[in-house]
Length: 191
Length: 165
Image (cartoon, rainbow over all chains, first blue to last red; front, side, top):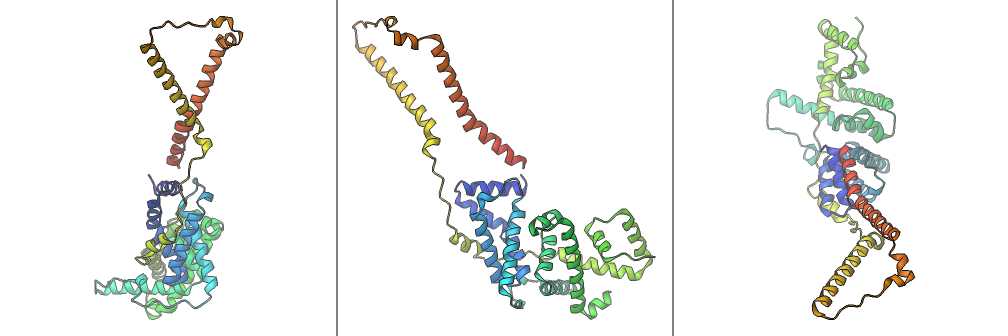
């Protein structure tokens, strides 16, 4: 049984009134939902609120879900739209996430120069993502998060697969430029 | 030699570049140090994006969400959907009651039963015809098939459709 069939089974159980199925569905998708929302919003509390709202919308609209389509595509569309709406609603500068934040845990178990360099790059990428527009971040997140296909991304974002491809390409280019700005000397040496 | 565009480099990284592009890429990698560093820079970004961690919400996320859910009540079966079973149950009770009464009557009675001369009654005569029996069997068969379809075939094929999806 593949992931989508498992999701459909859980949804059927929810429809038939099985309370444990709610928890199962939440636990299966909460991390990805939260990650999509967090990357767009850059705020832990807002991201949790959006992810929770998305789940509530799913539970409220189970009747409208077509069992022949993929649950995650439908669900991520809800998360994506909710996060973008929240971003527009906030219209505030994204909050700097300090190093103690739960969402940005970086392992410092190894002190080797290579590992430190890797961690620096990861941090730089996360910071660079924060500086991109919500659209760009969302595109990159959807593309890399679960390695969704262009068709799935186009379904989630309601744009054509070709447009999605161009948008992802541009977003990655802007990310590279943002990293160049941030890493300065380090990136210059790499380039 | 002509350099590849950023888009073509991302196509290589995404694994969807054409053979022609890949050949050009291999050739550039071996001949141009400038291209090599340019490509490696994009490759590093690509690999780091692939390695980005999945974020975790707070530990209370599930509990908070479950506390806000208004669980949908269990669907009660409507009277109409239960009508078939009610009918079958009543028929069974009636059938069993008739048999037990008959058994009780015959075991406790020594008197001879005078069988009415039904042949003289025109109404009963029409009901006891062969056609009536055939119609009755046919109706029973239709009811049985309808129950079989609703209770066995439909759930089976619905389940099969979900598995195929």
